[in-house]
Image 1 (cartoon, rainbow, N blue to C red):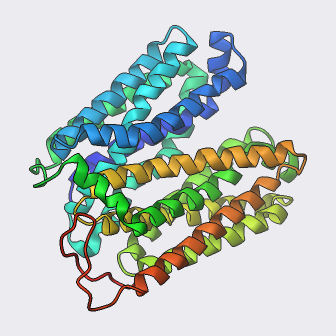
Image 2: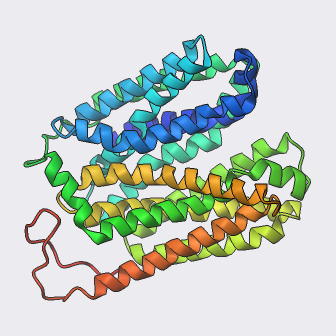
Amino acid sequence: MPLALLALAIGAFGIGTTEFVVMGLLPEIAGDYGVSIPSAGLLVTGYAVGVVLGAPLMTVLGTRTGRKTMLMLLMGLFTVGNLLSALAPSLGVMLAGRIVASLAHGAFFGIGSVVAADLVAPQKKAGAIATMFTGLTVANIVGVPLGTFLGQTFGWRTTFAGVAALGVVGLLGIAELVPAVPRPQGAHLRRELSAFRNPQVLLAMAMTVLGFGGVFAAITYIAPMMTHVAGYSDGAVTWLLVLFGVGMFLGNLIGGRFADRRLMPLLYVTLGGLALVLALFTLTAHHKVLAAVTVLLVGGLGFATVPPLQKRVLDQAHGAPTLASAVNIGAFNLGNALAAWLGGTVISAGLGYTAPNWVGALLAASALALALWSAVLERRTPAGAAAQDTVGRPAPVPVHH
């Protein structure tokens, strides 16, 4: 794998850390600003909304800019946002800093996926995307626990200052290691938007929303589930989240390895397995060891869907992949927000702390149904027809995975 992927992985590590570390520091931030924890929770919501809106916005603004230059600008924006959060005199200013940082999130992963795929041979594209996303998974194993420890020990501002420093490292790495490829011929907004006329692109994004949403329906409420149902102490939740991160790391590697070989069968297995494991979580959550194993499996199966789903979008948005790739990153966060809301709704309805697992299972099963339907539609395309791609030029005959 090219060394340039290391620079992309460093940027992904910083982004993953800043996205999730705030959850462990909400009590400290709320206490410092003299607000309630739910009020401080707007820092999580604001970031997610910023990702969903920023992914297409920043990508559109970058259609006239080279991809390397745009990646550097995004890391600069990410650094400024985290530095503003570290120095914020009020919760409102910190929320602004979080939103500024979040605007870089979707576009960085979207454009970074395209760049990573272009750096390697066609049969290694999903592996290259997975290598970049390794930074995000390692952030959950190392960055978030370390950032939480530093924030609780030396003050939460230290954590965000450290993440801003990671942004500088990522920016310098991109400047030094990522090749300066020319802007693709004919790259403009109309061409990028044309990708969304392809039903397969929209189906892949819907799979992203539902499939990864299934993961977060359960994981968002892992703390009360593990403490009130499984019987873990409050302090053990941190290590359970690390275990979830280990599962994400392993799932990402597996997804990247096999998506280049049998993409659709991999999605059938991972989405079906995720639906089954989440359904069983309603039972295993009552046993400490089984609950821990299930958390690992949810992380593994959930993140094994990321490289194939991202590659699926790139493949189907042939000739205009950048905006579609970035929007698909926003789809992950949209799924997270939707699932968290649905999970909270069933808990508020009095169905118990394990009820979000059923929500997650239904979401994952729905994603599997869409994957099967996508394959049916693909097979209906006449094998010898001169298929047209999303920009109106002859495209390769679809590959039946």
